[in-house]
Image (tube, rainbow, N blue to C red):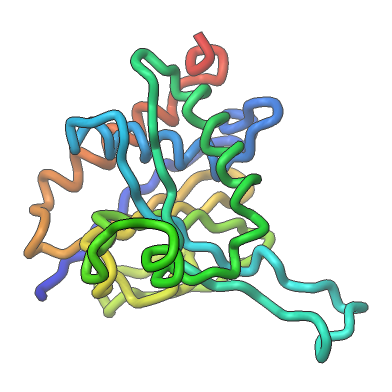
Length: 213
C-alpha cells in the first residue's frame, strides 16, 4: 500500500487557548477529531483508535521487578454523540469514557475486539489518534518513513500501518500544537486529508468560551 505523509502545524497556540477547566487537552483534541470522523462517516456513532503509551510507567522508587511497566496499546474510542452537542460536551463525554476505561488500558485491541465486540476479526480502524505530551517525549524527533521530520515520537507502528489508513499525531509543546497527518494514499487523497486537518484546526482555534456556547 503506497503512502504519503503530510504535516500541518498549528503554530503559536498558547496552552491557555487549549484549556477548558476540568478537561484534559488530549480530550479536547479527541473531541475535535471525533466531530471530524462523525461528519465524514455521516453518523453520530463512530469509533476510532487512540494510542495509549507511557500512561502507566511506574515512578523510579517502585519495584520494577514486581510492578508491570509501561503500557503501549492502540485501543478503541467510541464517539456516540447526541444531536447538537457542543465540542466541549463531546470532550467531557470522551473524558468520562477515558477515565472509565483506564483500568483496562492494558488490554490489547485484539482482546477487546474478540471478547467485547461483534466486530469481524479482520476489521481495522479507519483512523488512529496519538496525542503526545512534551513532558513525556521531550524534544525527540522521528522521521516517519523518511517523508517528513516532525517533533514527535514513533507511534505504535510506523504510520500508515496495517491497522489504520490514517494516523493523526498531535504534539502539545510549550507554545504550540503540532499536528501531523500520516495517511495511505490508497485510501485518501491529499486534498481530502487536508480537509480533515482544516476541520480539526477550525474546531481547536475557537476559544473555550466559544466552544462552550
